[in-house]
Image 1 (cartoon, rainbow, N blue to C red):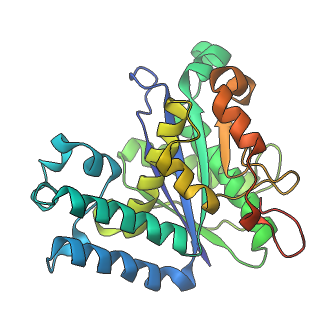
Image 2: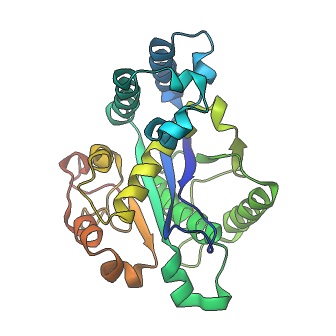
Image 3: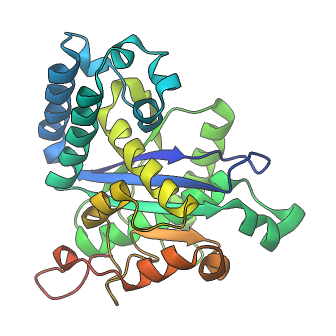
Length: 278
């Protein structure tokens, strides 16, 4: 069994100030869950020096912005060096363990240009694209296993909309390819009590930041590159580990990211048969 933990970065509403938002999935084999979870708890305990460390939540924005840290005593009390150790330690856990990242980037301006008043809720675009890529990844790499989707809690209306969309896709399949290897409804959990939602949040922020700045060289984006899935045909990130909606506008809106995602190759992503992970 595989578990894919999903969290978002950026403001999702069309009328918000941000242009992009990201749905990111961190996938692990359930057999590795206990070990990775313990690694996160050990790191938190070492940094926070508290018996409550496992339920002290860490979010990317909270680490980066002093005004957010000051709202939370356990973060506000950390020195700059301890903050660095916490951040680097979490990224080390992601990079040094067997996991995969699959992400959908939504450009809301492009959706408005393409669909106008007929536009769907951005959540729908994001979840459909992400489920397609998770399904494809599982079908190619773990055909005999199933996957369950776990998301950070959100409003009841969003939960209902996402699970309705997901359930219909499980039943009817996607427009381009029938869904495979994903079972059950989406499970919603409180990120405070889930280390994997916190880990995928860290990754989602860095993907969003790279697209917002059109900067593939952003340090923390570069750090997680080896964990993305790659296109089985050409080895690129584009359309596999990272999918851009709307692709019709990708090259003009994000020329640097477009070039990078289509040309970057990761040797570690090559399977024993010479193919790339999808």
